[in-house]
Image (cartoon, rainbow over all chains, first blue to last red; front, side, top):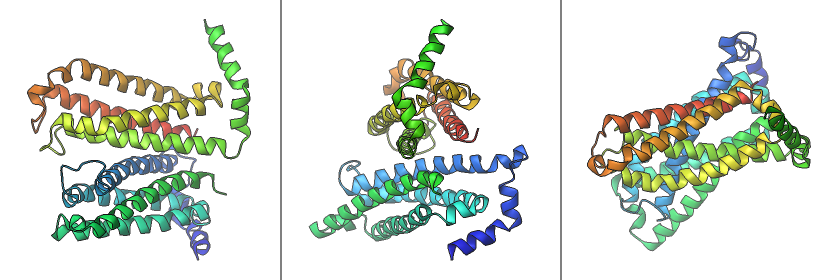
Length: 167
Length: 164
């Protein structure tokens, strides 16, 4: 399915435009898109770090988890929006390399799981800032989610860089 | 002087390590991955502080609270990024020095460092006077803006090195 999508994208005018390296204006599209992508990853990783280290009670314990979530989640969603937009540009520019790569598809799967975890933490703390700290069981659960989330985001960043080397 | 530098660069270029990095399929990507991830943490953590210095975010928190929280991560990530950056560079030292984006990146990092030293030695000395101000004085806002501009430019140059 993804290979077929890649084959279709190759034939689109947008792909021709994004991958045209004969003109400076179009040659700049992919590297600039990748630069913005990396800057958005910086924002995302710091937000993920702040939220998950607070969930693990390693840092930021002066504020409730709900308060930290309400501070960092708007930035997280903003960064994810930028990542999606620049990611789409890069996929259209190089559809075969991206969509035909197991590394890329693994990265996308991990992204979906990580976003789901972040959304769960955000939504559960919206009505009750101390939701995850009310019982020992909830504290254990959110600690597990935080470890999973940190591992996943780290894996996503590594996979993202390795897509460049995928054949 | 130049002969000595050229000799040193040629020696680095001919080391077994440089040869191994050039020939290995996984060594360069692995080191690059660690380098890029460290840069991501450097830029992300310093940006949070820069934005606070500019009075744009988390105005309810003191500047020192944020700097105490973020700078240990910034420095750790910076040390890792530097170590792996040097290792990556040593795989093709002459070729990298011949790339304008690489040279500009080094200059920008030096400027970011100078900006930080000036900030620490001059502006930050009287931080107690404006630590909790929602909008810090012009010198602090300026230092934050310059730091952000330098680091974003470092990332731009770093990415473009891969395209030339």
